[in-house]
Length: 215
Image 1 (cartoon, rainbow, N blue to C red):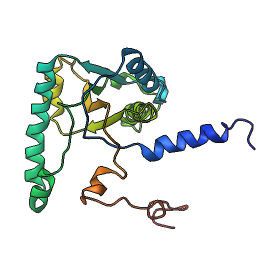
Image 2 (cartoon, helix red, strand yellow):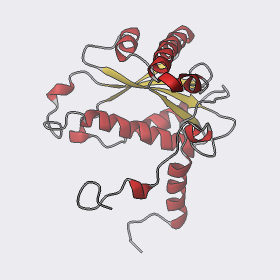
Image 3 (tube, helix red, strand yellow):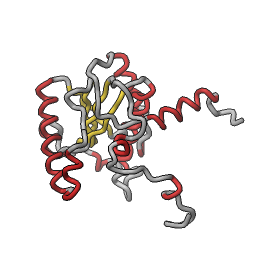
């Protein structure tokens, strides 16, 4: 037994949160207590980041009119995405792709401005700032699932339009609209699998040894 390992019960809880995390689209209103929201955001803030640059910025949306404006941006992109999908357009339009109007809390996760000044870990891989923000979002997602709250990541929006709507500084970039809050139930499998849109691929198809494509 590794002396640094969690107990069996604690390990099981970690793996359960990972396995049961879902990209939620169906919410039932309600609220997220301020102390719980603070705890979730602190979990996000504890994510790893390249060069400890902590590029994440979170904007909590509290004004109903602003929430509606964000919804309209997402709806506009949903229509454009449907057009781009061609023969799958009708099937896509039947999918529920966001819960902006129904979730208890709405957050926008963004990359900071001035990122070009951070060279450590980014000289050859500048996109590591995006990877760092993704880690923060995943921390928030797993913590929310452990707390019994649903979360959905919405990426259907024009980032320039959303940045302008939120008065974000030049060089910053919104990466995710996050719907957070109570749900009636969690999907038993990812929603896109449940709706027949896609099938998850098994790990053995995506794991190589020593060189690309070698199983």
